[in-house]
Length: 414
Ligand code: SF4
Image 1 (tube, rainbow, N blue to C red):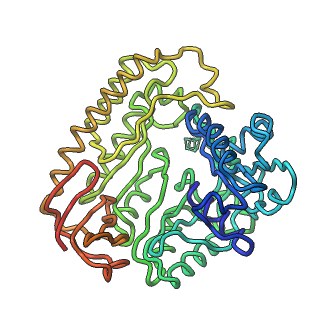
Image 2 (image 1 turned 90 degrees about the vertical axis):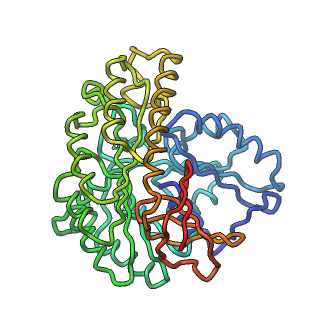
């Protein structure tokens, strides 16, 4: 989401600015921030100091993104060298922010200009397309509804036109983006036919020349049969599902306000695992307030049964403006850390087994990079795959037979 927001910001400024990687040359320095966890927020202020020390005289510093949304003017109070603050929902107002001394624009109310942008692309072969903005869920640990506001759906014809344009420009793969993609279909700014995410997938997949569709992230609660069957049977949809578990304990899931149970999650996993070569990734929070040893055992149990190919696991981090930040039954840091190590050790075993099982398979890989005689890209099911090859393969989807597995990638022969 932030990568796409950065592209949009650059696009909006493209008539006045060029991107540079040379700090000494920059007239404008933008930091696009995350606030899902505590650590990046702390890092922000040290980064501001470093940029301020090394920047060209009179260069402006602007803080964008989710931390800008929820901290607002506090950022300028803490770091007076900052020239403006622009929230995640206000990307389209970047010029106004630059031109208003000490501007703080962090409105999270509905604003349809939040999805109309010029163009900037960092990858020639694939791109992201926003389909919803904001989130209406109330997961008790999550700050996102406070930083990105209420969920709005972008009208289907705007999405289709955008994808068509990308395909005309040579893009082969699009990732449909939303905080909760399978909630697509509510709160349009215009009169709109009744629709849902499955229908959107069907429409997008009809675009000729588009070869691959990905999306992130779906909510397990809304992963109904219709949606999973479309995912399984639509040949353009890549067979990688990011399916955020957060906890395997039904009790804890209730406290997290996730809306599903351990049984529901495992039932959906079983349905997904019927799809040949499907890859499932997940997010897990360890040490959520009140997490008992028994709750944690449930998480381990789901991980053993689901056998995720990829897992993003973190210690719980209390965030401001969230319900869980008020919970008093905090888990001891050392206990939480031990649980995290145990979970990650289990995941490593699963990953080793899963990666080795890929040897001998033939994967379709979109070649995105070339360096020193080696080409690399992502398989349909999201493995990073490398093989000997030349530059002429860039942008092609090629068959690669896997010969070796490593912790984070696979090697094969074209
Ligand atoms: S679904 Fe829950 S975790 Fe995801 S963005 Fe919305 S509130 Fe946050």
